[in-house]
Image (cartoon, rainbow, N blue to C red; front, side, top):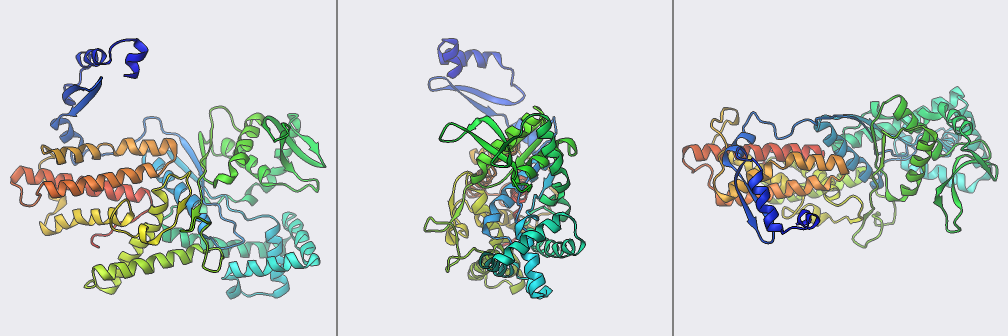
Length: 525
C-alpha cells in the first residue's frame, strides 16, 4: 500500500499487477489479494519439502563474511564478578555465537580492567598484611578491606599511588605481585564462564594493560594532528558535536595533568589496534547504557584522528539494568552486591527442588544435572529474552516457570520431541522419506522453521538476542499445537515419516538456537 501511495495508484490494482508479473511457480502454491491490497503468499508443499529435507541446512553462511571484533564481559580483575557483569557477558557472547554461525570471522576481546589505582592499593595491602593464597581466594573481601584502608589512611593511599607508578614503570616485584592478582581473578572469571556456557577463554583476554606501551603514541598522534588542547593542565580533545548545558564543547580528556592516562586513552588505543592489527570491519561493544556518551566521543575522536577509517563500523550496543522486584538495583538482603557465583548456586538449588517435585523417581545425579542445565539456562534466558536496552526485574518464580517465554518451557519442548523418538523406538539416523506438510498445523510449523536463517541475520545485524528468544518461543509453541493436532506415532506410513522428520527439524532448531544463546538442553525433565 505504501508503494501504491508513492505511485499514486489503487493498492488492489497494484497488487494484481504484481501477481500477474512475478514468476514464483516453483515456490508458491497460491497468491491471493486480501483487504485493501495485501498479498497473501502460500508456499508450495514441494518447496517446503525441499527446504526441510534432511540434507538441507536451515542456516546458510553469509555471502559476504567479514571480520567482527566483539568486546564484552570486561570485568574489573581487582574483584570477583558480580551480577552487574552478567548482561555484558551473556549478551555479547550470544551475538558472537550468532555471527560465527553465519560464517563471519569473530574475534572476541575481553577488555578486562587490570590496571590503575586499585591494583596499587591491593599490592600495598598485600605487602603490608602478608596475606596468603587462601585469603586471596576471597578477592571481594580482600578488596573491601584494602579499600577501607585506602579511604581511611592518607599515607597508605599515597603509598598505593606510588605503587601504581612503579607498576607502570615495570618494577619486577610489583609486577610479580600484580600478576598474582591477575591469575587468581582470571581463574575466577573462567570458572564462571564455564558455568555460564560462555565461549570466552584466556586467549581472548586483551586487557587495559596490553595497551599501556601504546598510550604515549596515541597522545603524540593526536598532538601531531592538532587535536589536542590543554585545559587546566590536562590534554583534551574538543569536538563541536559534543556540547554541555552551557553550549560549550565537552572535553575528551586523554591525559591528566600529572601525566596519567584515562579510559578514553586506552579505548582509543584499542580502536587503533583493532583497525591496524586485527583488520576488523565491524567492532561491537557491549556495556551498560551509562557509557553511551563516552563511546560516542571515543568513536568520533577515533575517526577524526584516523584510528578508524570510514569502512570500519564502530558500534556501541548498550543495555539496561538488572533490578529486583522492588524496582531497585538487584542487591543481597543486606544491601550488598550479589556475587555471580552465588546467584548461579541459588539458581541450581531452586531448579533442583523444582525437578525433584516433578520427577522424584529420577536418580539424584540425574536430577542435579538437569537442575544445573535448567537453573543456569533460566537465569540467562530471563535476561536474553528482554530487549537489551530495557531494565528488567529479576524474578525467580517467573524465570523458572514451565509456562510462558522461559528457558524451562523451551527445554521442556525439546524433551517432548525426544520423548516421541523414545516412545516410538525411532532411530533418527535411519529415518527415510521427506517432510510433506499438509495439515494447517504442519504447514505453520514448517514455515516457522524456515524463518530461522532470517532471525539469525536480524540478530547479527541489530545485536538483539531477544529476537532469537522470541523466535524459539514461537517455534516451541507451534510445535505444541502441532503435537496436539497431528498424531505422529499413530499416523499411517508416509504421513508418520513426514511428521517424524518435522519433529526432528524442530528438535535440531531448538537445540541449535538455545546453543547460540549458550543454553544447554537435556533429553528428559
